Image 1 (tube, rainbow, N blue to C red):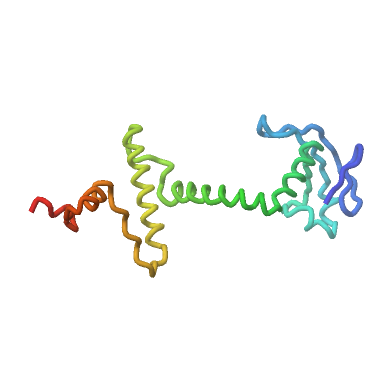
Image 2 (cartoon, helix red, strand yellow):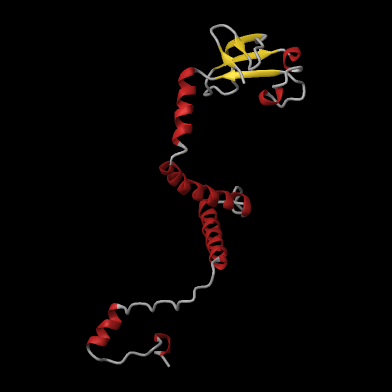
Length: 174
């Protein structure tokens, strides 16, 4: 790897960089400006540590350095990402991102089959229902019987007055 000095860049084996450009233009207007150091092919090709620096086929090496403030921020954030608290917070985000990825790639939700917000919403809701059914189908069966539903207010009213109620309300009309 390389380290920066005041006006030159020195590689791991003591090779001095062929040139240095500061600030280097970046493709995005929001990207941080880089300081770029270049090493010649003749410096990189015979170096025994080249595999640690680059994997390019033409044996040239270009190293970009972010501003010091950004580098310090990156180090602090990467250290924070190793804590159990951060990993617990990220687990939630990871689950959400997995669901979004499943919808986008597994069910073709990047494109809508219908025109109009109403029809698109129906497609999204039905796709979400289908995904939930697929996930429920994959759950292991439970050995416990399902808990019975609590009586409704009307059923409680009938029970308090000791009025008979049929087992199925669908058979009332027969």
